[in-house]
Amino acid sequence: MPFVHLHVHTQYSILDGQSSIENLFNRAEEMGMPGLAITDHGNMYGIKEFYKFAKKHPSVKPIVGCEIYVSQHYDHKLKDNAHRKYYHLILLAKNYNGYKNLMKIVSTGHIEGMYYGKPRVSHEVVEKYHEDLVCSSACMAGEIARCILDGDMDGADRAIEWHKRVFGDDYYLEVMYHKTEVPGLSLDVWEGQRQYVPVVFELARKHGVKVIATNDVHFVDKEDGPAHDRLICLNTGKFIDDEDRLHYTQQEYLKSEEEMRALFPDHPEAIDNTLEVLDKIET
Image (cartoon, rainbow, N blue to C red; front, top):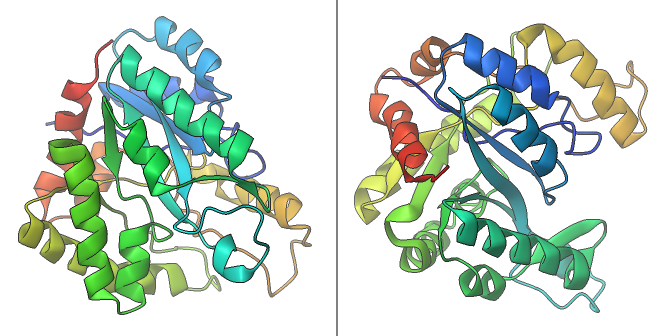
């Protein structure tokens, strides 16, 4: 059973994603993947180009989405650390109506919720425009993962219950594993994922929510990792030899189905469920 990447950043995740949309489709088709999502950070700038190349690759169903920023403290007039806090959330459009709702959410973030350069929205905005959208809990910066890592299991339960109430069976918990193979790189991300991912599967069983595996793609091929690392230096204003700077694991590439299944050998359903999401998307 094939696998579909549902968490993908293109070059339109400015100075964060390095993936060429054309190369993403070329690689997805080469690996026999039946679909491919676009989920750039807080924007939908790449949608037109995404559809342009989707037409050239009819065997790969395009999935329009966005990784949005959700804040529980939405008053943009309050300039303090508590109101700067936000979570990541993945939204995917099931059809044209979902696409319009996704545009409304993203536009609201840019018009009303811009704060320290992040176009945030509130839970109320997400709920208002939730129809015909598939939702997943995103990465380690997502609300569920943050609650688990902070030891706030009641908060994790409440967050899952809220999203399940709003999205119903279109809400999925998301898991990913990135163990760096680059000598000298920190294993902090890997250790954090090892801590929260098993708990996600427990919470999925508790709340009756399905799990999907993703890879938080930021570049196309594994060999692109060092180039992406230099892009992050440009983003953060750091030199390549600065010790105290942001590093990705260089595992954030468009992995094959076999590579993804090897990450979750005890949970094949997390791979298979990506096809369930694909089936919900209308072309």
